[in-house]
Image (tube, rainbow, N blue to C red):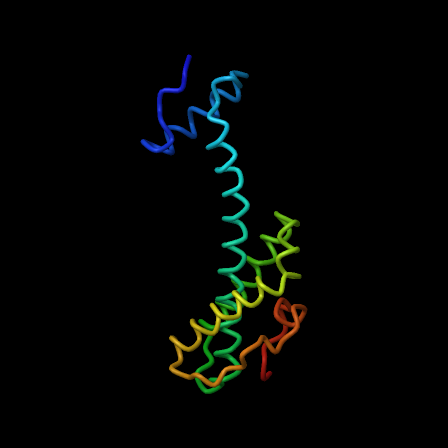
Length: 146
């Protein structure tokens, strides 16, 4: 049986077909180039998820520190949920820990956090670089200004 669904026509049908071909051992019929791209995209998706969660967490920590009179249970819940999500991602995909050592990754995550915090607060006097350690950021009992 040959591949009948082109990658560009219906990626879901294509993926299901590729999985079937793999399970049946029909390796010669696989769309190797697109399979390789999709596998690489899985890793990129995990990295984007980690960066997104970190940016939301950092933005809420900024809001917590710079708007103490507006602190809420909702902010606290968001901080907790993002920390839990980050920890879960790191446990499920240990190779993501390398991102946390990458200054370029941190630069991007911090800039995303700043943009969120500025947009949500209207403030603009946030520090240009993250002032907290990773241990503090991920510590479930820590919040800035407490």
